[in-house]
Length: 207
Image (tube, rainbow, N blue to C red):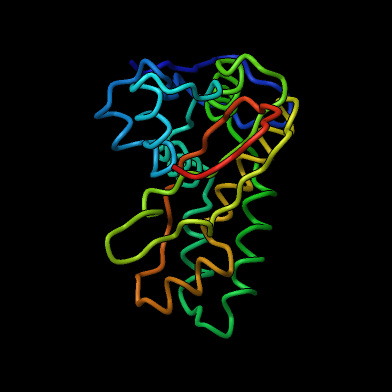
C-alpha cells in the first residue's frame, strides 16, 4: 500500500503546487511497488522485514520523488547542461556544481510533505537517512558504497537537507568517474532514500 502526502496551503520559502499527491513506501507496501521504486538497499530492507527479521523502523522516499523534484524544479536542464561535456578530468568540478545547484533549489510543498510523512512514519526523532540507488547491485556494474548516507539526523529541516544530499550524491565525483570509466551514459538519475530509526547497536554486519 502506498501512503500519500499532499497539501494545498504553502509555507514561506516553499514552491506551491496544485493538487500534488506523492507517496512513500512502508512495510505494508506491495513487493512489486518496492521492487520498482525503492532502490537496491530499500528492496533488501523490505525483504528482511517481510521475512520477520527485526529491522529498525523504516520508510522509503521512492526514487520517483527524486526524479519528480528534479523535473519540476528545473534542475533537469541544469544537470544535463553540466554533464554535457564532462570527462574524467572535469568530473569533480561537475559534481560540485550539481551539488550546489541541488542544495540551493527550493523544495515544493508536495516533496516536503513526502519527506515529512516518511520521517513521521518511522516514529523516532533520531534517524538515519540512507541513499538507495536502483543500480547499486547490478550484474555487471555496482554503485554499492558510492552514494551518501547520513546518521543521527534529527528534525524535519535536517532530514530534508540530508535527503537532498543523498539525491545529489548520485552525481558525486566518484559516481561520475565510475560511469565514465564504464562507458555508462550520464544523465538525470533516480535515487531512493530510506528514513530509518537510529538504534544503539551492540554489533553490526552485512547480510
